[in-house]
Amino acid sequence: MRFVIYGIGAIGGTLAAMLSLAGEEVIGIARGRQLQAIREGGLLLRRPEGDQRARLETAASPDEVTFRDDDVILLTMKTQDSAAALDALAAAGLRDQHLFCLQNGVENERLALRRFVNVHGVTVVLPADYVTPGEVAAFGAPHPGYLDIGRYPGGADAMDTLVAERLTAAGLPAFADPQVMASKHGKLLMNLGNIVDAAVGAQDEAKEITARLRAEGEAVFRAAGIDWRDSQDDPRRNTLMAMGRIEGLSRAGSSSAQSLVRGAGSIETAYLNGEIALLARLHGAPAPANAAMVALAQRMLREGLAPGSLAPDDLLAAMEAG
Ligand SMILES: NC(=O)C1=CN([C@@H]2O[C@H](COP(=O)(O)OP(=O)(O)OC[C@H]3O[C@@H](n4cnc5c(N)ncnc54)[C@H](OP(=O)(O)O)[C@@H]3O)[C@@H](O)[C@H]2O)C=CC1
Ligand SMILES: CC(C)(CO)C(=O)C(=O)O
Image 1 (cartoon, rainbow, N blue to C red):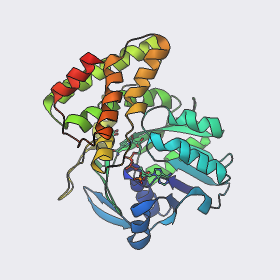
Image 2 (image 1 turned 180 degrees about the vertical axis):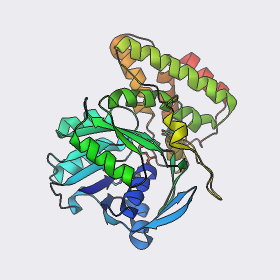
Image 3 (image 1 turned 60 degrees about the vertical axis):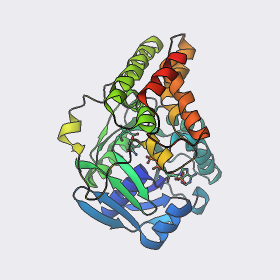
Image 4 (image 1 turned 90 degrees about the vertical axis):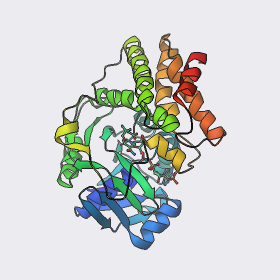
């Protein structure tokens, strides 16, 4: 088996480094300064237990990869970049190799299944940062995190088990999960707070606002008949990983906050809070607070607002107006 990891940022970089340090065959598809830095000096993975540098085979796009039957593709870009990436994979000749979506939200699997037949969802509980080109950090300890892996739309097959075994052997506990989308919907409820973190940072009022977004999300899931499995009360959060400390580094915030920190020019909110807004509109349930967060994220991009530059009252006002 060869792992083709598409998008070498916080999550893809952590996986690429761990798998390759464990002796797995890995190709990382990266771009820009990240690609250049990895080609020049490898990829530094920083963890509470210490730093390790991985040497990676890289490609600048799927058409630089000669795909093999034993390839598994791990999608690790943010959702707003997935459609273009999937089109590039199709154009490069990817066929029925198994493709795993290691992304938040629940849209990537649908995008993938339009183009490919063997699609798997993965719930990613792995707090990680893309620090600078050539360097990623994973803050969990003793393990960087854990993953649930299953087929989309449901079930778990031999490939889920095999990939879970390889990841676990590389130090990242992974579990074949026939109800992976219930797990992913549970994680999505947590990620409704990503935009709050991006807008106001980690302050007490942020928790209340996030709780409101979450309650609205749960009500919308009920209206839409969607099952979910709670992510925040999962005991594996304590047994497998807790937040650790890395010397000289503090977390830049949620993955959405990191997009703003890096000036990425796009943010994932339309696929997180926007999933709730979409379901609400489809099923006739109200979701003004989550809809307002989608608009707020767009405003932050448009006006070039720095992460953490808004006040909780700004968010509350946007929710009331929404
Ligand atoms: N970071 C975290 O703690 C967690 C993140 N997640 C989820 O994991 C997913 C990935 O997030 P994260 O790792 O933080 O995101 P990052 O932005 O850190 O990494 C994504 C990487 O993919 C690259 N990329 C995007 N499109 C392409 C392309 N066409 N070709 C080559 N490279 C490409 C990006 O490049 P560029 O920078 O140039 O855009 C970037 O390097 C998201 O769905 C996120 O919500 C889940 C759990 C935790
Ligand atoms: C739960 C959280 C915030 C952990 O990093 C996450 O999934 C993200 O950053 O997207």
